[in-house]
Image (cartoon, rainbow, N blue to C red):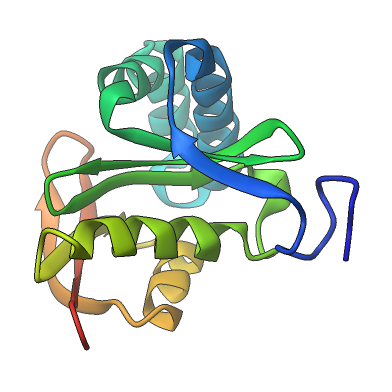
Length: 165
């Protein structure tokens, strides 16, 4: 079992807890870094630079702070999830720590919390975010529809998951 906080095992000491105001700078930094590293292939350089440079990314994270849970490993925030009613509105894990099970742990936590209240939950993903879409499908999310997001000029997939299958 890895003990350095960033090994390949999710057995590493981790905690998922509500975000606080003191987490905001780290969450905004994490979002900017992940968007910069992972979204260029489907939003393009202009879209990513505009979203980050305009402050829209920071504002989006700030506006959702009260609905945010953070994932800490070894005392460092490495991911977060924003849930609004039955919607997983945003979920990010530090892009340098992908494919280590942290996203799965965070997603399962959000699902369990939402299924205490809702029979059906949803999330949206960019159509061309193939890595994220494969992740959601692997975790038994089912595509409900595809739609065009006017504000971002991109197609999105709406995924759904029902309690008990």
